[in-house]
Length: 152
Image (cartoon, rainbow, N blue to C red; front, top):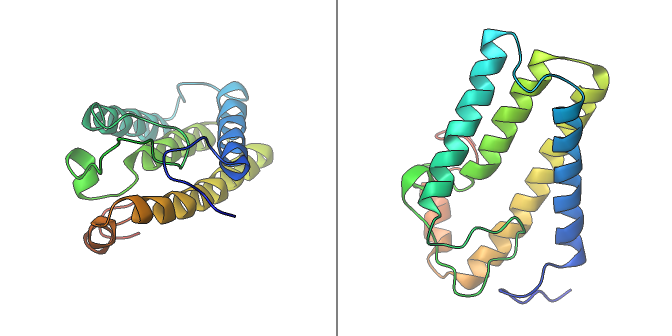
């Protein structure tokens, strides 16, 4: 399969985003938006704050939900991107973990696991495309972590 950077999303990318959105919709609508437990609420709030910080940092980089970088985009390395390459995905996972822990069911746990696998696949695809578009991406990968500063 040949992917051209800056083009329409591939069928694989469309599937990855559809799975992501489906998992998030299920987690949102199968339990409370604001969990009653303080720890779970803290995870949701931290996820939302991290996501907002990442969005502000991306303001001029043209946000895209698909792994394919848009043409004319630039590599963002400030804000939370100084420490982690995918703070938006970390944000999504923090919120999802908060929603799961606030109202645990086996179905919601399975959905969280599917979301995690989906995002890891999406990251893998996105990083390959970013490395092709931005020569400096490999150096950026060496000094930052994917999702958790200093860990992964």
